[in-house]
Amino acid sequence: MSKALEITGLSKRYASGVEALKGIDLSVENGDFFALLGPNGAGKSTTLGIVSSLINKTKGSVRILGHDLDTERDKAKRSLGVVPQEFNFSVFEKVEDILVTQAGFYGITAAEARPAVEHYLKELGLWEKRREQARNLSGGMKRRLMIARALVHDPGLLILDEPTAGVDIELRRSMWDFLTRINKAGKTIILTTHYLEEAEALCRNIAIIDRGSIVKNTSKKELLSQLRKQTFVIDLDQAVDEGLQVSGFESRVGGPDSLEVDILQGESLNGVFEQLRQKGLNVVGVRPKANRLEELFIELVRGASGGVSKPALQKEVE
Ligand code: ADP
Ligand code: MG
Image 1 (cartoon, rainbow, N blue to C red):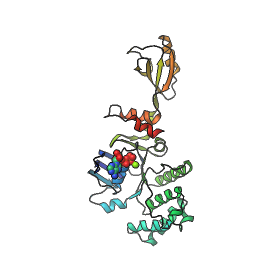
Image 2: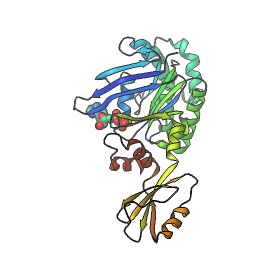
Image 3: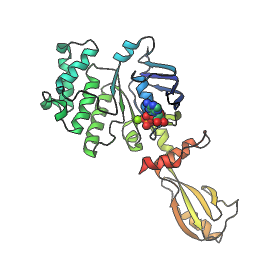
Image 4: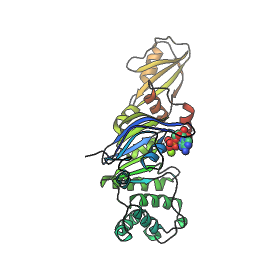
């Protein structure tokens, strides 16, 4: 069976000269729930924009459920439902009509579309509002309308660009539940997010994108196992030797009078303190080196080109 999405050597250089994608490869299996995770400006929307034919690529190829976007564009588009980051429906059109119009773009008549329109409006709590103009919906309802519209032609693959950015917690939960349900029923879902928690709660596989390159592409399980380690900075009351080690722990000298120690989930720092005390070193301060998302990025990008700029990440995490 063909993959839900297969991206090969995809590059994008905007007219401004910005190289938003630097030849990325990405492959998503049928039935997967996949997250493209990365900080602002990483290239997430550019990737999804190209996949959904809203942005022209510079180089590379995209296949959606086996259909090449260049040579079988109609079939590729028919296989795909897209929920963009911004609302882009006509606010004067009625909710129901927005779905029927959308189905029309795929050659589905109003009568043929009826069952799917009813199904998704009911599923997403919009059935009572079907005769309202879209402008009369709350922000949360508009977002659900975008999802219903993306599903009305029954695509095999649903992609959502930051579906819960700026959405309140209650709506976020109900959207997560809905997406989980349709994924279990067989739809492949790809979403972009800059919330680690969202990728963690929903997805089976995760790719991390940073500055136009994929820096990691693995299962959530594997990714979380890398997260089960936290680095602490231990400040000491005197200068330490370059060779200072604590047995049983990964550690390194972090500064003239500080030591960095990796603590695995379930491990205690007490053993470290005890060993330092035996060496005649007193601890004057302990702090985590970075928060979880930063920790993950630092872990992933270590050894890779460039590294992640800390200010950019800090902005994400606040
Ligand atoms: P993300 O969705 O991960 O936040 P984007 O794909 O929107 O990232 O942006 C990737 C890079 O491309 C950023 O440097 C951004 O400023 C740039 N970019 C995005 N859209 C345009 C555009 N229309 N013209 C020029 N540069 C753009
Ligand atoms: Mg974006």
